[in-house]
Image 1 (tube, helix red, strand yellow):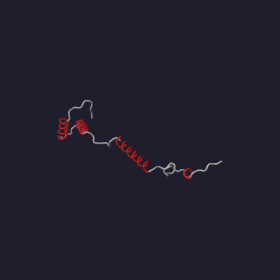
Image 2: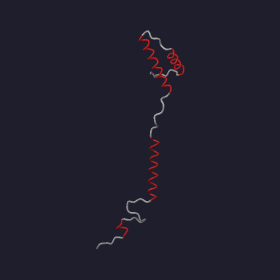
Image 3: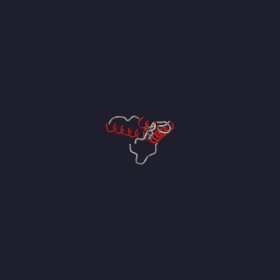
Image 4: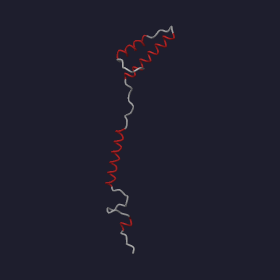
Length: 104
């Protein structure tokens, strides 16, 4: 003998009238909140964008470039080294104490 199914069973409705597998508005709100929370956590875990190179490192590189230019002029022979290069080099040296292990 075959049992008769109720309309709810035939349509696969849940007691609150939703079809099986459908989410209620409250469930959707909770899901949205969880997704927002996940996005916030992802943003907070991401690395910050690249910032500026430290000024002391820029000046170390500039000091090295001046040293190399002076050396090239000296090795070429007969070229006068611009006084501005020497003055800039001395200013950088005065502003930045020697950093052990840093060689530019």
